[in-house]
Image 1 (cartoon, helix red, strand yellow):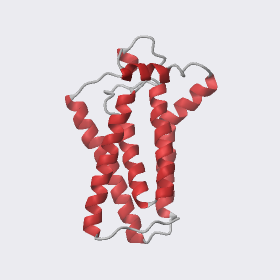
Image 2: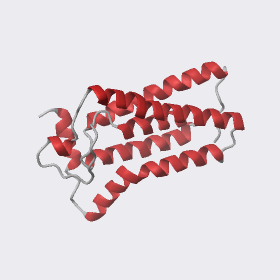
Image 3: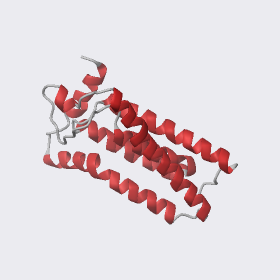
Length: 181
């Protein structure tokens, strides 16, 4: 048994222990994403950034997240077909089901790109976004829809794409935005 599979079973063993814990896992795995997007919009629209800076943050975060999730992740999934753990492994306690391939995690790619973009403009908010993204993606492993390697792969894609997009925006803009606390 691989380390990835062992880690998956360790996390997935938390599923089915209590209705409250299962509900919290499903909430984090499925609905925390909406809260993060709303928090991002609040950060941008109600921050002290100038209008041009707000547009830049929206563009960097939006382009990063969309390219990571719907560009790179889908391209990898087109060529590499890795079934979901609840379909491939025995004795899995699934709390959620999905039909697409599992590697890399689209949620991880999208939200790690978003968290990285936020972090590059505002460290304090960025740390909060990373914590919430880690909670969401670990919940997806516990729920039985991803292996830990799916999350690591998606995270690597998201962080890399966000850094590239930010770097391009930085060169185009010619300066770095100041943080607002």
